[in-house]
Image 1: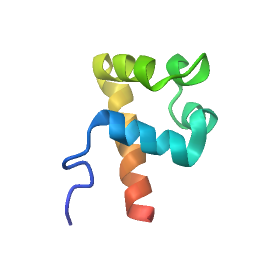
Image 2: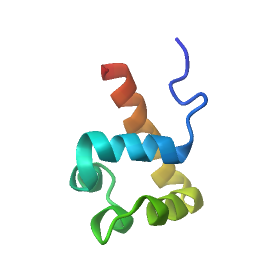
Image 3: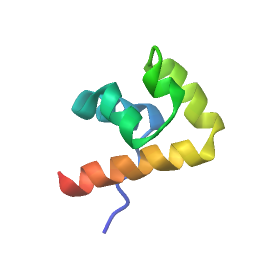
Amino acid sequence: MNDPLHGMTLEAMLTLLVERHGWDALAQRVDVRCFKSNPSIKSSLIFLRRTPWARAEVEGLFRELVVQG
């Protein structure tokens, strides 16, 4: 099976997750302030790029989304 992350930027993954689920649902799945308080793609990307565990959570959610279709 191909890796669903191949060729995907973190920004593209986050944008798709927000479009599909919204910030509130993301904040419930990944408990980080940047998803709860004035969320934006830009501020979230800064945080996720500096925080490996949070980035791994977002990548895991994206994998679930792609596998479920």
